[in-house]
Length: 394
Ligand SMILES: Cc1ncc(COP(=O)(O)O)c(C=O)c1O
Image (cartoon, rainbow, N blue to C red):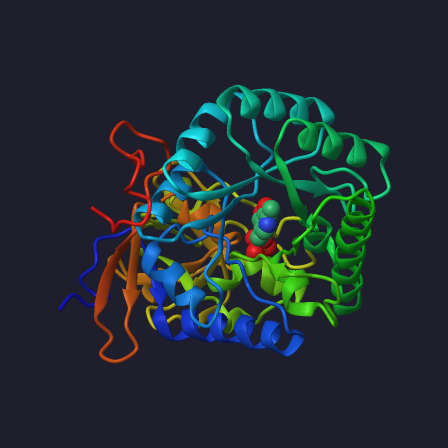
């Protein structure tokens, strides 16, 4: 039985108790609102965790890469929304997966993409399921719900034999909120954008069955989801310092941390050096423009309790520099060489992406279980073969 004292550093640690509490919180929020969850695989990229998040849910998932889609399909998870605007160059790979029996839905937000999809689908004699991406707040991608291109893109797809089955909105503006009222307002804005676009498409004769919204902040702070058929969220599984800074969770709720060890002292500067640099913590500085800047992560003791006002101030590739938040010097005697620390991440998705997998610290006996993340790229041999879509992980 491996314990946290024996794990090689730097590595990713997940507290099972906190993971489960975060999953339960989202499940009960959405069940109170009467809408199912389509968890986003992009955060955890581990099938065991994804399965936990699917408990009590219909079973559909969201992915941000085709490699994630393949990992889900190999695990028998077949209802997959690929929630990044489709690149025309990926259409052969999409069609290959649809032919293999995967229920893969794609998204787009431009009539020219619709033309590329319609032409390719017609040539391949394949009816693709397409969701139109809607923009609620000008943050990233999508068409405004009232834009004429929405109906234009839908008409092109339908003429090309594709099914326009729904709309998808991701309210990235929620990450800029500074108070709970803003989170509630953005959640409602997201809902209105989605349902408005769905109604316009429905009025044009498209059979809209999917009205998909979501981000962790809007999912957890939506007051009502009338007209919405599913909610997507990913970072809620782990939570992180950005979410804590927004008031979406408490620091104590963060399930993910990087285990690191003290490897030196910067004498005369009151700074401590650890063996976790940006390759372990990521370059993400998501709290930099929040009221409380957490540097490259908040420092906790081995039990996960925050050490008062101590953060990772800067990083090199393999080194992290730990200092007092207010510049107060750290005493070497409190930070002996070999002391183990846990660093809470700014952005769980970015930090997790630096690692091959997690050590899940089990609640029952504190032992650590290794949970791998799926391959980040499509690799030769990582493809789903026809008939394999319902299979299990090799
Ligand atoms: C399309 C889409 N849906 C859902 C999510 C999940 O949001 P969060 O990471 O806040 O849980 C994301 C995250 O980027 C996304 O891009």
